[in-house]
Image 1 (cartoon, helix red, strand yellow):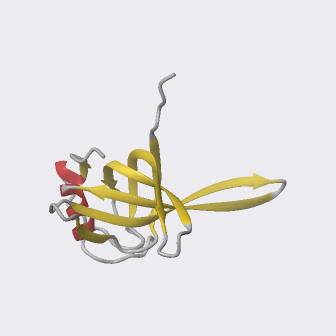
Image 2: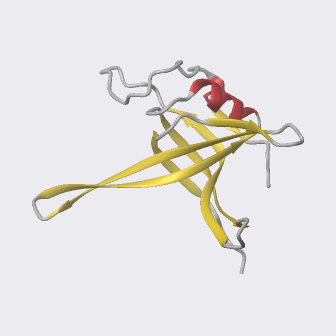
Length: 135
């Protein structure tokens, strides 16, 4: 049976994007995303936050590094990936992360909320970027 792997998240950045380049020159941005869920338990309103690591490749990685900062809202459309590695002392490690295919910048809140500061994202056709990297 074939699998299906699609993730869509809306949340706020927990840190500034970290932009780096692979040995062949491909831009890669890593960032943390907080996704909140509010629900009612009895008469009490509760909030649960899920923290997710996001990886973005190509031109959109450069745009994320240039225009996004901690607190900015984004929509991520991508796939879940598990990375596995071994530490220098031989311990096996693994980590789940979302590899973004599209990152959409959310408009900044006019009431001063949302935090983050930094440069405004361009609000025209290139706000949502398609990834050209398929790994």
